Image (cartoon, helix red, strand yellow):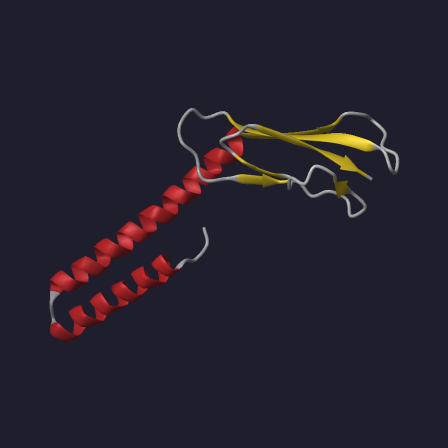
Length: 125
C-alpha cells in the first residue's frame, strides 16, 4: 500500500483532533481521532488480507512458440494472467520484462491489466 495524500490527510486530521481534544478537554474530539485511526488501520488490514489472498489466487504463465530463438527470427511470446477468485480483486497489472536485444514488432507493450485474460505479441531478436 503506497502512502497517498489521503493517508497523510487522515494522519493530520487525527493529530488535530487529538491536539484539540487535549487542549480543549473535549473527549468527543479524542473519540473522533480514535475512530478515524481505527478506520485507517482497518483499511490497511483489509489491503494486506486482499494482497495475501491474491498471491494464492493469481496464476501467471508465459510461453514462446518455439524452444530455441535465433537472432532476426520473429517469435510469438504469450503472457497469460488469471485470478481464480469469482469475487472482485485489487487493480492489478502484469508486466513482462524482455531481454534488451528484443524488439517488439506489433507496437503493443507487454502489459496485462486483469479484466482481459490474455495478450500476446510478436518479438523479434
